[in-house]
Image 1 (cartoon, protein in one colour):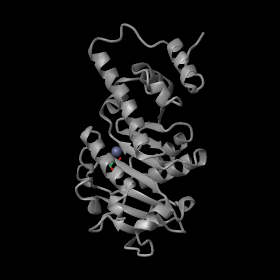
Image 2 (cartoon, helix red, strand yellow; image 1 turned 45 degrees about the vertical axis):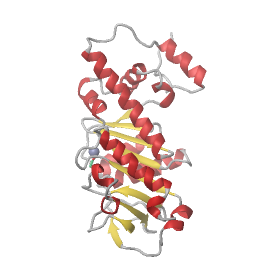
Image 3 (cartoon, helix red, strand yellow; image 1 turned 120 degrees about the vertical axis):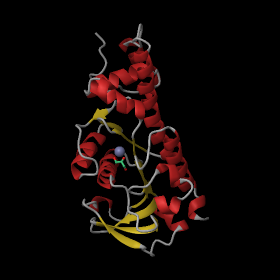
Image 4 (cartoon, helix red, strand yellow; image 1 turned 90 degrees about the vertical axis):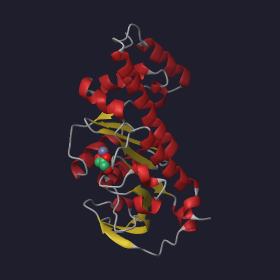
Length: 272
Ligand code: 2HA
Ligand code: ZN
């Protein structure tokens, strides 16, 4: 089988395209990294042929030898599906953790996403709590981004509002959402702040910028962001319609948690 015919490759390109279609990835906004299965990639690519060695600003030795499919820095999600060779690439982290080997794609001198430190640090954090973790995804989901201007920026308040906007939300992200302070994108600092939060939640809001999601596969991670973004969209409509006249109560949420056998983030529901 050819690399571009594999399910993971097609799903990656389709996911980038879906995110663009949703309006979450204007211009070069957003980035995706997918941790690949070594055996799966070796079947469709000669991994002994290194096209280029690319240095990094971050020590990723904890990921040494691991393979990733990544979006390119400055590349547009809009173009991924039509021209994957130029916009995405397959990389492997060298043993020293300081360089990466480019094995496929990112043609014409392109390099991986500027958010590689945040992605790699998030992969390291998630793999510590979930062996099946594979995906980190960042985008500029419009309604969530807008909410960071108008809503309380505490994790509990933001989580509760999102849970209250659609009945499914609590089931999809019972651990809630995290929020970091505004920080400069592409830095180790924002990577460290994001990864620290990744231990407890798979969704992290970057105020006035966008959102990070992580998960076990591309569909699940996309769906996670999609669900939170849908809740933020409903919040926007509810506010525009003059505010809520009735709502999902904490008792409703508690009953939901029992029925679906999930555990809401401790202390986030008021049940007395
Ligand atoms: O890749 O979205 O946060 C462009 C960005 C940086
Ligand atoms: Zn961004």
